[in-house]
Length: 283
Image (cartoon, rainbow, N blue to C red; front, side, top):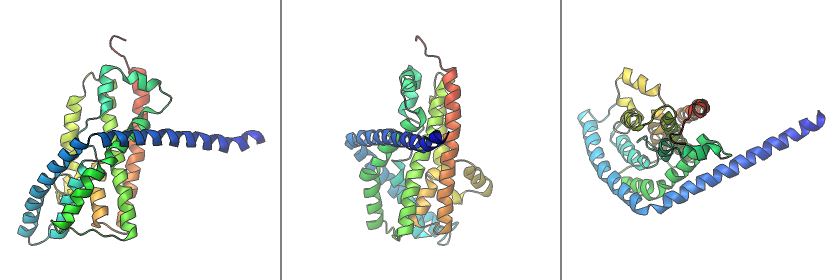
């Protein structure tokens, strides 16, 4: 018994080390995959830049028409919101599309389920690696343009920068964990495109892609905050821009982490149920 108690921590540590090594390699594989599509990154940058100018002009005009402030947003903060929302758009998944859904449909998901890695965490690690690479060719230039052209100012104190980095990674991870739930609906349905379209419409609106969620009427704001979507995009924007700071910023990041844990648990339960349900046509 004493020998077992002494060997248990070493065994747990070894499993943890293996888990981290495998998922780090999946993350790097996703990063390298993102680095291959440079033309797509350039196209995304041009699109985000174009819509950034349009959205900035509309929202700044709305703030000025409202007397210089709307729901805590003045001209400077609404400008920061605009450019950061466009900058992070290339990294968070608000489209509902993911390669896993295609593998669910054609039956190749069976191969993934036979591998000695967790389907949920491994696929998410790879997608997050690809998504975070997009920050380099898309987010960095857009933030620089926002500062140089749009007059955006960002706080550079260590606490805000550190919490901002954690919030961006957490938001990106959460977005793919939620999309994972959309993809594994394929365990029970032949086609998930309808669910993906519904997700794209709802998630973008409730995440704060078009306007800050704090501009919503009370009932709609409460509805949005009852979902993980504001933690995907609105929270990283608020933390990085300094719109929330100090204790509020820490609480916002904690909410993000809580949503990550929740979606992990739900995804694991649905995956276990789906494995028992899965049938591959012709296989």
